[in-house]
Picture (cartoon, rainbow, N blue to C red):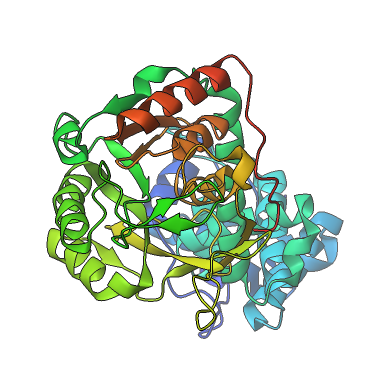
Length: 427
């Protein structure tokens, strides 16, 4: 391989790279192992490629440096020069840019060998980033985007590499959820359901032990289900007056905030007539919330109207609250959740929520194996939905009647005798 005097190498004053990284480290490597590959020059000794190697020789005060003249370069070297020059002009689309970065890194490693961690020598990712004049984090990210595009060509449709990177990270999270789902085993048993006052029973849970609160407290509208599926008021053993209900929710929300881990969510069903009172309560205990509630649009028949001047109620509101920040598993989904109501013949509780709706909320806010808590368990739909999605469940129910029915339901689920589902697949 021909050599020329280092002093005879001509370097343009304005070149692509300004930050040459750890030249001293490269100099030590050259001193120990020699130059893995010559610099590229033309016949007038104008430097074309290899400025870091040239500068390392200057640091070492070496007299000569191995060169390869550009007309003698093989196809790999020519490809190296072509890509580097295109990157310097920065005339690529983002898809071409990330592909070029990956290819130039691959070519450099083929030409000079891959660096061995802790031993130096060869070409490293840091060398690629230095040659491009950018941070190693940016180079690493772009190369990973290029690799992901090979596996998933649809990523090319993203408007920017930032959008592509977000999609890649989201896909990784989905893969993680899928992997966890194959490993996690949840055994359904009745011990997850507790009988008693919600605030008292939740007081027995450790602080920061719950991953999601999903609950449907009494609405404070003094209703009782009649045999025909409609409602009447004044049930002696069921206190549903407004003052009592809001006081209960106040106490329970304090416990909800205490037991919920940082960066976790809560879904709270509520009657829109008490919206201001509900948000005052959750805000007071420390929750942040989305001011626009989620809407459960209940298909499968009309709700009870109650008179010829009243519209039938076919929706319910859900307040989305959070403690800290945790991204939804799938962001940007509609806040109108279309799910059929539970048919009267399958209900064990007058205000029973469909498990399909609850599964959707749980899947949006948790990972397999995490703990879902429902302080107003009622029909135990939340506990069943948690089990169906491979989450742990904890629930509490004050009514002896519904506690007993809940235990029976959980026993049936545990034996594989799952009650007829709501059948909703519309969310």
